[in-house]
Image 1 (cartoon, rainbow, N blue to C red):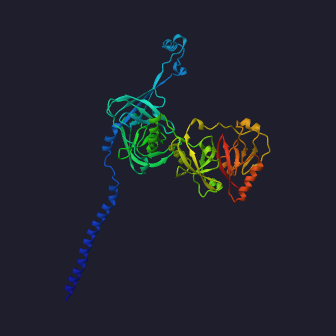
Image 2: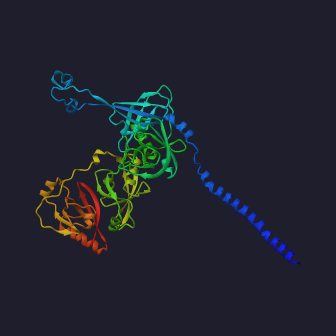
Image 3: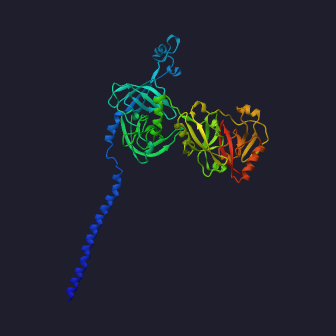
Length: 496
């Protein structure tokens, strides 16, 4: 082989891997394209809508604008213009506002706007209570331009839901309730309503969170970033199947406009309320007859519970629970066969259970579980209003500081001064040590300690005995029953 032949062979040898590299490069490009396509598949699997137009067309005919009118009496002090002596038209205003020697202001009409939705062909409409509260007249405007007067069937202030009824010549388009319990964070939702009086406006977003509570005992709000503004109240929140899974009720906003934090009461709550309003014109919730509080980790330790769960009974009222043998200090672990997570969970379950039902209640008492049977009564909100409390007592007594508390026995004079019922016995908190565990747990002067270690205390000696018993049992906390302003609650204080 000559020198030139070697170079040629070498050139040939070099050329072969070059062609292979080109082929490999094309294979890499193809692989990247296939990978991109594979990564795109989950997005298609989520079935993200290209448009909400079909859904909007489907549900809009059942959504209504609501206008309310309320007659407001004029303020006599603000009706007569404040005119300087000798001003033009002074005689005219004097004659107009002082006919027969008396002011005769004209009442004015106050109007409010909101939204709602039809749930049946015969004209039942759901909205928020605050949309129609106090209204003298309620007018409903439909998507096709029809306007009908509505009558109020019933309201539920606890969930801010109201039910209206209109009479139409033909069946009305309506929308069904969906199962809000199946809704997931991240699901698409559509809000339809009358924001700022614009009428039949549609906004889309996702479910941002579930199970939100604002202020009510029965709150179960869906949080969404779909734009909700004033006037959207009472309007529906739809899932992608055109079912109502929430009633738009409130927004969180520093300026009154939407910032992407809106709340819709879940259909799980609304559907039950609407059914009862249709049947009875009012809501009929179950009532257990106890006051309760959440079980914190320190309270659980003081009671001997393995973990903080259930609802701690702070007071048993005359009613179903007392008849069934429920006691103050019991922890309700299970209600009607379902574990109780906390007080809010129990309140909702009891309310939904129905009046007159016999339910099984499992309580934790003295280190063991016990099963009771309770027949639920009907909840009466007025009956449950707590008694008014009073300020700290002014009583001469020698201070006795225990666990950061200055305690004195409750005397007849103190009972009279503080408006305490004759049957209440205990120790009055006269002062709370600054920086103590008692202060951090919210104890204040004027509170009454009625139990320590789940035993009644009427003297300093009985309190010290309960404290020593807790120490002997190896407890790190002492459980107190405290009445603050008439309301009982349990407080676990760290043992020094």
